[in-house]
Length: 198
Ligand SMILES: C[S@@+](CC[C@H](N)C(=O)[O-])C[C@H]1O[C@@H](n2cnc3c(N)ncnc32)[C@H](O)[C@@H]1O
Image (cartoon, rainbow, N blue to C red; front, side, top):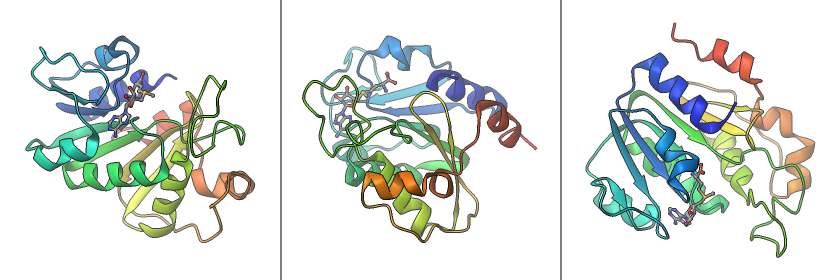
């Protein structure tokens, strides 16, 4: 299951009307594949500014002046734990009731891709997104959080409730040793059943 397939599934299943993508890069890879009535995107390095709701800026700057609210958001900007944590908190503050946040790169597969900065020569960089996820799993009993085990780990956050994670996660090794408890994995098939509108 690709990220845009999951996001489009949520949009259809829940009748969502508004979408925000943080970190667009190549629009055809994800943003242009999303089918939603109102789409907004932010990225400091790319951005087709002829489109009305593309913003060529950082997510922090964007949230300072954003006046919209969203049914679903996709966080895939700067992959540091600190930034991703801020993106989640900012997005939660403008997320409509019953809304969903999807986060990319929540399931790093080795120390190199999970490094705090991109390692020279490495083709992929998940960064420390896993630390932002773990911090939310440790401190936010008001959220429901699971990672779908496909496309680099698709984290899904909704308002709800969860039993907090209390173990360590400050290094990749600590995270990897406790991965199942932290990410509460769902296969794509399990996810479609779990998130099916009741
Ligand atoms: C992994 S790419 C996004 C990929 C895209 N979402 C997709 O699914 O194909 C990350 C993007 O985040 C952007 N970015 C970097 N720092 C950012 C920030 N502070 N706020 C928003 N976007 C940022 C980069 O310019 C880059 O284009």
